[in-house]
Image (cartoon, rainbow, N blue to C red; front, side, top):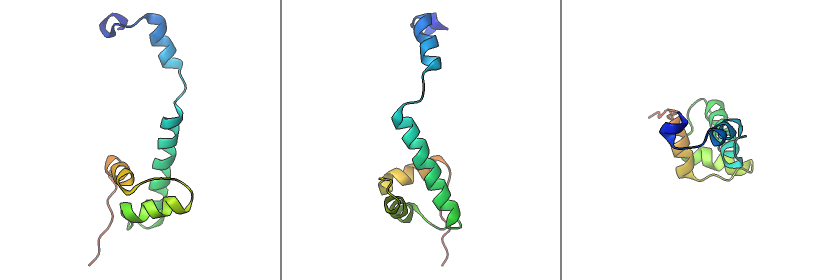
Length: 81
């Protein structure tokens, strides 16, 4: 496999044992909070309201970022007329 990827064997095994980065851990935390807020709202909140709720609890997230997270996790708000 290392020959196919063009990397050394030691580099590959070092990569396997590496801890997740701060950015990855922060993205997981934001994703779990988005899912929690979505479930708490009985699946009614969309990305604008979830972004406001995240900012209220001190997590900095924009509406487009929340929308991307929701799309990636297949979360859609319930729209009632």
